[in-house]
Amino acid sequence: MVRRSWLLCLLGASFVHAQTRLTPAPGGTKRPNLVVLLCDDLGYGDLGCFGNATIRTPNLDLLATQGMKLTSCYAGMPVCSPSRAALLTGRVCQREGIHDWIPANSGVQLKREAVTIAKLLKGVGYATGMAGKWHLNSKFEGEPTPGDHGFEHWFATQNNAAPSHLGPTNFIRNGKPVGPLKGHSSDLLVDEIIAWLRALREERPGTPFFAYVPFHAPHEPVAADERFVKLYPGLEPDRAQYCATITQTDEAIGRLLGTLDALKLSQNTLVFFSSDNGPETLNRYRTANRSHGSPGALRGMKLHLYEGGIRVPGLARWPGVVKPNSTNDEPFSFLDLLPTLCDVSGAKAPRDRALDGANARALLNGRAIVRKQPLYWQYDKALGEMKFALRSGDWKLLASGDFGKLELYNLKTDPQETADLANSRPDLVKSLEVELKRLHREVTAIGGK
Image (cartoon, rainbow, N blue to C red):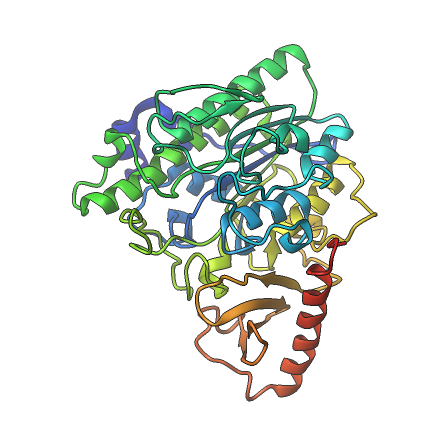
């Protein structure tokens, strides 16, 4: 409480959500509203509720106490565009033809025929809004936009906020360039979604909604307002900027959650928060001088298929359904979002194409997820030798690009992946290798179905 009071004094009323407490109401009486919040390059160890003792995240820490902390939450890939494709489609990214981050004007895109969460929810009467980093096309002219993928209102950049998080100039709203903006990208996104929600309440009261807010922060180029940088006076300046960017994004999230409270929407809203992949490595490229993210105790970072590249912080809150202040170590993947949100909304998951995720409704009630197949990752440009990963129960198999080298870890007893058990468990390695190669053949087949 001392730390929270101190922050409130420094940051003022914008942290007001951190003082609120939800009174759970019975769930399941009507279709829930759905909010998905996604940070960019936020590490597993970057939040207070995930063990960071330096970065101040009071609103996300409160969200963790109001709901469930997902300690084995997995991104779709260890890099941005493929991970976002997996989140929105419930399919391993190779099935959708997206293998790596999408450069501007490259022609790579999430094709119009892809079935996304937004399309499915819009089809059953949900209002759908998106504000943030899209990164599922290479340009907005002549390629599918968020509007083509089911978002009736959208406010987006193709990739990063440019020239930085402060004062971006490259936002597009519903197909039209917005021009130079004042403020931090995280605040601009939240302002947009709040305005959309308030208009929705006026124009279509009672309409359930899906809000997707993929933040640019804390991806490079990192920048924060000075009032947040001043919270970290003892740190080296670039590291202070990184910490401040996360704290500023946390405050913006607090304003959004506070608006749900003010509009009396929180009790019937499922909120999911995570990050698109692990943290960027400091100085990996010329302008990554502020990438001070942490994977916690995990091995690897962004672009790696070890846990630090794909295991990300996860939080879920749904009053009356998700037990407050609970923790679940059951593996949960971005691939699970589409079938899960279909289940809770009444939408029908597509049957004309393979889905790689599972309905995680049981996890929200503290139970195990029933999976038909293991979780699978393939990243040909992964840093290090390992290009494939498979998680089945407590076990994780990693494979090199030619399958010539295999590593096996028990993640329940060794989440840091320090003890390779491949030589001591050859039968298990063989059975998991068979499944890994089957999925590899399937997801990379022409057409991807």
